[in-house]
Length: 438
Image (cartoon, rainbow, N blue to C red; front, side, top):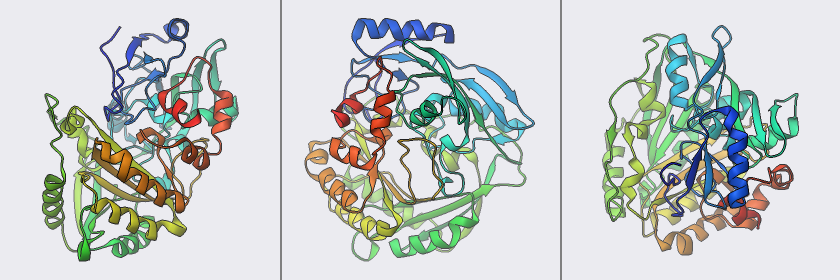
């Protein structure tokens, strides 16, 4: 039995007791034993989900991180099969030197393969390649009382669709097979420019997104007046040369959790001002390694500790294209006037590529992600105001990042939830699922 486990946001503070499965052959018995003893369980990978979607209703989870073996690889076609506990970083370590990269990657390489499927993660290239589920060939799903079922677009299709973005509720994935994308270099050719307001961001996005594999923006969510909506726009493509090298730079670490958050409105405002002025005023080419481009926060291990013992919440929403510009202005205006500032604010436009997953988060529109130190103010004042804007604009929140969404908002935004509930493994349930489905 392992040490108590928590979600990445450390809120809600509900430590999980982990029961480790070291081998795939042990997985079914482990799930059965925890279910019998505690009434429910949930698969738990590397703990990179932010809210309560990775927390079992019983607070007893089956740890899958030890299932970290590669099963097979076709390096001519870029097809890789691995156990669900393998992290994206471990995949990149073996695939990059052979000229292959993840077709879709989120903002951390420390998520597991199973977690990437369960949350149907997306990244900076959603407009060009969709979600992680769009590049998933098949997987094995261990279900209570049924054993292992192979799921793919042509086999057990209903479970395939329900499991992609299904938050670990349809069964425990023990292995998965994905399609990688070919690269000639692990370095990224990027173009960086700062923008003065949201109008300029949307103009840059409409002009440049479709010319590049990757596109994202950092935004100063505390700026007001003439500076409101300013930020830094970044596009990128895999370089044609520069070597196929894995980034092995030493990581920094936050060694302890301070009593109070080191992030506040004053520190966030100072950082935002400095960072914005540091960036070029005109489009400027840069070549960078893949790690600082995709995973800047991964350089600092345990960075979530800087928010203190109370933890933090991320607010991530997506707004349909038709309402995105007006809604983003409202969201940023409310955020700029809030008591607590967001240290990290990411803005990006999503494309129209449909995911095979029933509960996939992205839609054709604009996504905004904000991190806030946990306080009572968030759920009693700030988040209800933000939720009202998202609701009126026909948007939705990301379950993988959520710790507050109302059941009504979830059920309205994800009407396929009933199909997932119908296919939910009876041994599996989460704090999130109980909260939003009742």
